[in-house]
Image (cartoon, rainbow, N blue to C red; front, side, top):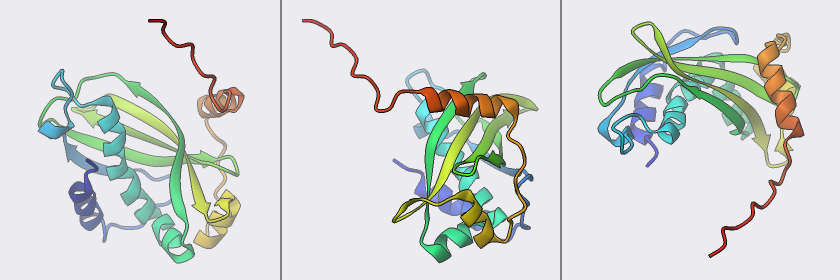
Length: 182
């Protein structure tokens, strides 16, 4: 189940935090709860992605994106992700989450999030995110104009651009894999 109560808590907790610029990092603390675990008693890999919402949505609030989405009746969707898992997160471990925007390519906004414990990186994800309307994807320039931030256009880090380039070559829809014979 989606962590609605935890999300409401994070939104409440960060509601009066100072505004952030796009380059700034939103830092939040979270616990790995028993229902976040898999059968190996560690944070489930899929649940990790869900928990990253708990940092990403408050980041959107703090940079002013959430207000623009609400005002224009736009949505926010994830259009891709690449994840790196490096250290286990166990039950009741407290983690510090870092969330920040990296840049955009005109169509997608790229975000990086990571979980830390004791100064050590545990995992990291890079998302490709899109703002959507009833007519499809809203160009980033239009979103930035609505936010009053038209000057934000940092170059994407080389490794993020390389990932975006590889994703552009990926076949869609995917090929149907051969079925196992009985």
